[in-house]
Length: 177
Image (tube, rainbow, N blue to C red; front, side, top):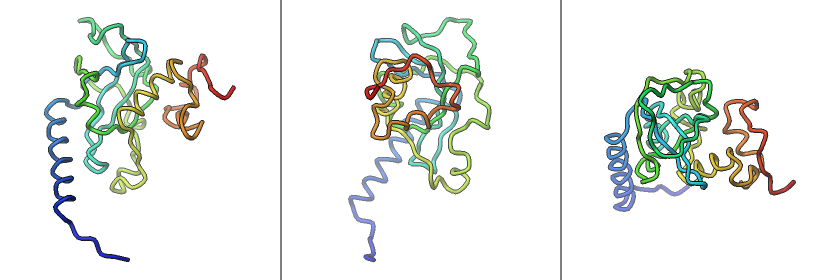
């Protein structure tokens, strides 16, 4: 097996990741409420759980079954934890996208038992997987029947992202049915 040394290219990549992580960490904090854009021009509400340095500087993120017409909340809005349908790890570059705006901050409403990949993170993140912004947006669009639920390379992949089978919507569309 060949021995690989760190070269200028790998140093550059490491610096780039650190800078993106620092930039993101300055922009968002635990409990921040974010909106993820949908294809129909509406927005889905999400909440940052925590930063995960062990998995490519990912962010634990909860998605809630709350659809907003515009990216802002009313002054008396209180998030209901029972509306959380998924907790995932997303790459921190999601937070740098213009469509993912921070619209508030509230106490975490997600129980610790629902945090994504708890067992894997105790083992330095081995086995944990994360989504980029495109996959996350694809997931929420499929959840609201804007694209087929079985659109991924594995038709059951999106089922695994749900907290429980009961959270799966009934009005989904499928390309293979």
